Image (cartoon, rainbow, N blue to C red):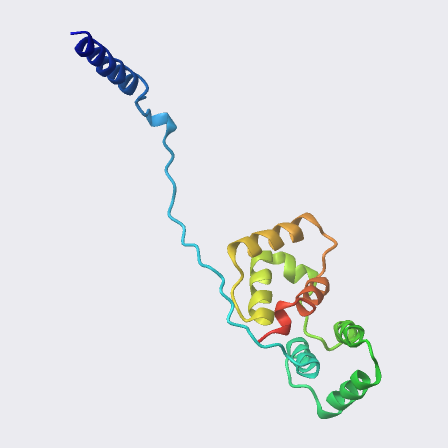
Amino acid sequence: MSISKSLLSLVILTYIFAFSSCKEISKENLYELKDAEIKQNVSSKKFVKSDIEFLSVVYSDLFGKTIPTEESKVLQELYNSCGDRKTIVDMVIRNYLNKPNVIVPNSSEMKKDIPKFVSDCYKKFYIRNATQYELNYLTSKIEKNPNITPEMLYYSFLTSNEYKFF
């Protein structure tokens, strides 16, 4: 009898704990969320451009045409004459961005539609769409800092690691 009373007490206590700890979910604790498609940015770029290929592509992206043969020869000579090749690449990009016939939008064009400008940069330089995070981050940075110019952003894209791959 003692065992059955203990067992009965145990079963009753179990039911009390089990059902007393359950709360009814109220409507005010529910949130409706919209489905969002999240794409993983898996880049298929596996090959590094040679420095001369890289500078040729930079020229094409900034001037909208292929690099002239003479310009290519000058770059090759400049590149071969200096031991610090990263400095040469940096100087050439800066020089290109300061040329009068470079094709870079002005600040008012950039600020007219910042998300479109950022999206266009990703397509032009990385040959891919910006992720939502990249788009939001850069758009926010540009909106909060009026001193950011299109040339600064172009320089950032052109000197990034991703731009060096194809």
